[in-house]
Image 1 (tube, one colour):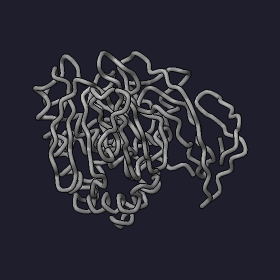
Image 2 (spheres, one colour):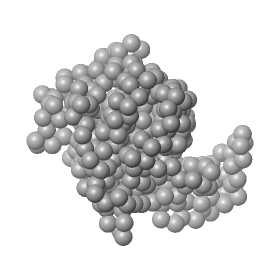
Image 3 (cartoon, helix red, strand yellow):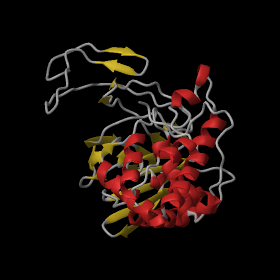
Image 4 (cartoon, helix red, strand yellow):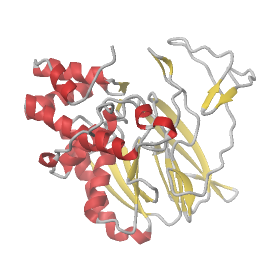
Length: 365
């Protein structure tokens, strides 16, 4: 329903078009939608396995309208392909009283028990998404870091990693606040689960995929990477389909800073010059085939190396000042490659065009 009137939407792939709804600047409309979601039995960001339920990207969101029009890029399973604005969420969730729940946002009051069910209410402000993780076997560690409540949720099988996960979350939170800017929300949740990935970021909630060969060192690295996304994606938003490097490469750079391995960032770009650091996801998914190795090499390895090269070129103090300025100007907004370059040029008082072209970062004219 739109403003109380029934409408019939049309759906094409992952895009739903609602008729008779025009979103003008500064206008308000109320859209009401009922939908059913069948949660697949898979170990993924949206799925369930044994006692764990992962609810990432589980509801329809408003597409972004920008200078290119409505952004309806297809979903890709490699990396991320999401693009969303910040908003306010008020979520009511009804489930078994036995469930332990980690979410974006914070719980409002105590759950209401009614007819054997627990009714929870959560609130989140200035977030791009709302994710949840449920497991009746979860145990929890909590610690206040200033005004922020940091919590680690873990299954008993991963008890030996819990303290290190919590410590990594706290240490990376403190480091990134110092090097980038403040963490603006009252809570940060780290949860164990299983997936084909190392970790997955959502506002105020990061999923850490546990594996048989998981080590403390590896888990600490993954936690730091996902916490870094609270700045690069969570606060400084970007079109992850068009500019995947703007969040993944930056999170990988700060992951290396956390691990004290910045000087080990020496990856080279792939030999094929068709692949740029600033390439969109469509370039990494050619002819229906996902080019995982090339994507990882460029975005996760060469991207952070490029940022470290930039730091060496303009100096660490200037680089940090540039990042903090970038954060201040683009917090809760959407950034582009052009925005980042312009700010770094302004702060460094240098023309960085040659530097970025040599590192395969190009701006579309």
